[in-house]
Amino acid sequence: MSVRTFTRAVATPPVVEVRNPAGSVTVAAVEGSTGLSVRVEALDEAAEELLDRVVVEASEEQPVRLRVVVPEHRLFRTPSFAVRVDTPAGAAVLATVASARCELRGALGRVVLTSASGDCSVESCAEAQVRSASGDVALGAVAGPATVHAASGDVRLGSAAGAVEVRTASGDVEVGAAGGDLSLRTTSGDVEVGSLAAGSTRVTSVSGDVTLGVRPGLRVWLDLASVSGRLESELADEAAGKGAAELTVAARSVSGDVRIRRTAPVG
Image (cartoon, rainbow, N blue to C red; front, top):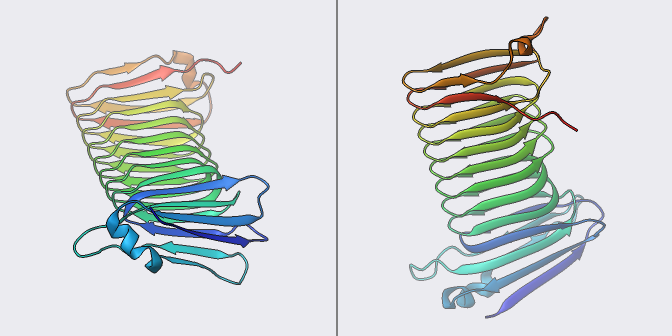
């Protein structure tokens, strides 16, 4: 299949905008790089016919804004393209896909993703904003805030230093470590948080189970409720400590179980 390429030197981390309904989108942040590189490959006959209509353009001002936009239709067919962008680390990324798989690698800046059914993954970024219908969402490390709104897709977040908000209907939600405020809501999906460190945590689930890990030694205020599910807490009585709470946890479930567990001490 045919391929289009584009290269451009940049002085500062750029803004990368990619729109590709079907196929794949890969953005790779390369430490120490000072250049942009774009590769667009046609993956089927419909894409082959439209390859010369793919928009690949970069602005002249700094920071450079790169736009890669592929045609959406060809005689009632959706063309499939593989789009890859290599960029300096710290680039902001705005990606819009339908069924295309979206993979963002390396250390990026602000990330905004919109997907219909394609799975999305982000290795590392300064902050993240993701909207997905049925695709799964996997975020690695987020240095700042993270917001994910999904319908039926699962949501996985490794760690976030800022506030986290996740809304999903039937998808499971899993957070490894949360360093700030946390707001999680799901209907039938399970919720699991590996480690809560500070701030306010609010979790709501209808039929899914809720499992939350709390770092040892914190003064914790708990507000737990379930209509028909079980309530379990491993926190010792002294976990509440004296003085103002360092962590507040409010968890609600209708038929799911709610469990609060103690995480292992660090070191």
